[in-house]
Length: 218
Image (tube, rainbow, N blue to C red; front, side, top):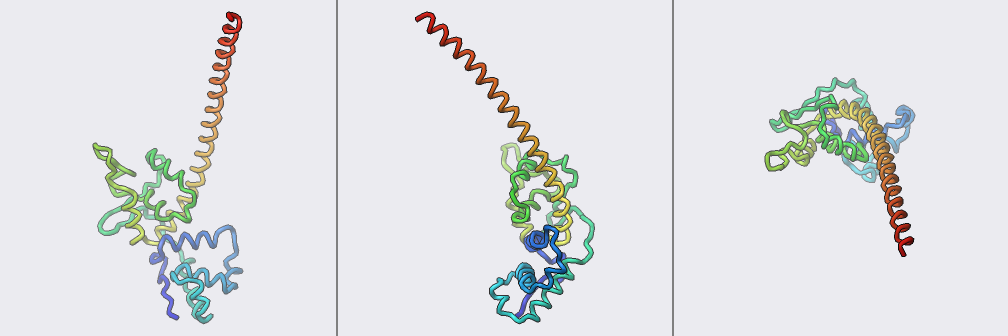
């Protein structure tokens, strides 16, 4: 069986790398897992886009060779985060300062349930067309740069080494953002409950006063 896998880190897709991050995360020991043939099959399946069922029918040497190559690729020394990519002549820029992000972007980022399952969506939120804002609108409130366009562009071509760098950066900030938004939601909920209590208290006072007047008059 012939198996095609990425030659280097840059050739890996964001989808492949996010699956690898999820699979190898949680403080597991890669060296120990590397002794497991089933683990090797899982890794090769991710980066070859060949199903595990088909790989189970291949010889062990093929799996070992592909896995050893991939392990070298995935453990190669990474580069620094550039913060920009060019696809089909369009330059996309990532602003590392989250304080510069628009309200709409922060809200949409908060709605992401799993960054591992939505790598292209995350990228399309962070890397914006040069000179534009996230979901920039014209005078008729029409979005000039919809996120769907960037998702398709990044699925077509996005360097794996740049993805790993921004993903590591984003994961840290995303956890901070989630904690901050949770605290904000909690505070908002408590304030809302307090306001509702006061409103109910006022309504009950008025209602009791009205009932008392009606009773005395009758």
